[in-house]
Length: 411
Image 1 (cartoon, rainbow, N blue to C red):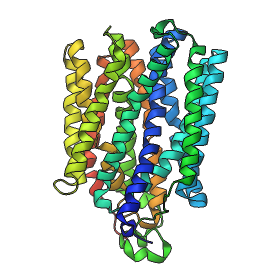
Image 2 (image 1 turned 180 degrees about the vertical axis):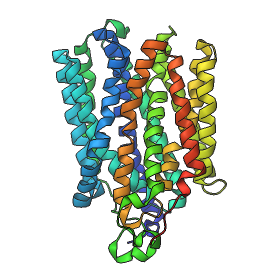
Image 3 (image 1 turned 45 degrees about the vertical axis):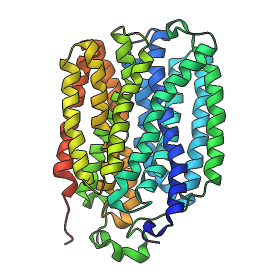
Image 4 (image 1 turned 30 degrees about the horizontal axis):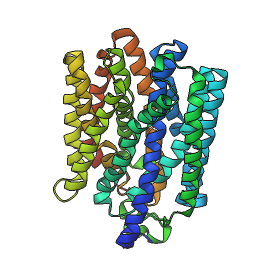
């Protein structure tokens, strides 16, 4: 079929529910790394720039494995690729246990890298799947629903570790050892293996975008005579925007706990909820207003402006107040991915999967920005390190105004 909109509403709802679980798993895996960054800093006494590599290195596979993941989807389909990703996740969590036993930061980095491979495969399957599951004009609405599932998982991972460690009698993470992480990871391995089985059994139909099928190229005449993804400048700019967006989103989600800790606030784990609250508020607005009241590009424009305001508020306000501004930063990040994906994939036709792999590569931005933030934090302090966010939102604003509209004409 050339358009997934022909699916029954009940089938779409069931697919959304299952893919929502997968987006929660994506966020939970990233949330684990955001918990580990300050924890490893305390256990090994290393600098923030090195501890944030555990979070950053999990994004490197998005650059290296985006194309192999797309090949895998073409060979075995979306559903089996999703199941494969959960198996890779389970292997990475087993490596985290091995890293704790050896008390080796190097093995922690390897484990985080393998987890990134699992995340690359799951993102390569889940993001384009949910984008083309229905009309492209309402894709941001569907991705917003997925975003709620994903972003609640980040603080859920931090809270999960906090509760399990408290159950183990560890209330002060600064006094814990690396081996104390083993029990929580045993639980997580079991859950992710179960999710892999669920993925195989889930009633997820295979879908294709308009014009993606060689027999229906007339559904997307713009792409019909194109010979390379490089002939789609809006897709290339979209991938760059997603690279920058993922970096700044990772900062807002992955640094709130560490920032609250660095300025000596009590119960710092509760502050990890702030960016999630902001993002979920934005997602709810996306679900309500897109596409009935505002377009996907307008939603991205509004969020970019909010992100600029939030970036300035964090670095200029007093520290004990600025930590609350991370909520505004989260709101600015909320509709970035939901809007960038459909705006970038529109009119790609037979190049949709290639374009998807390009966008998945863009998620590698999360590998660059956390270590860069850690380096800035070491030299200038946690608060001033947030200046990094300002140019990011300015570029995304450019894409929302002009970048997504750039097209080339066939010769």
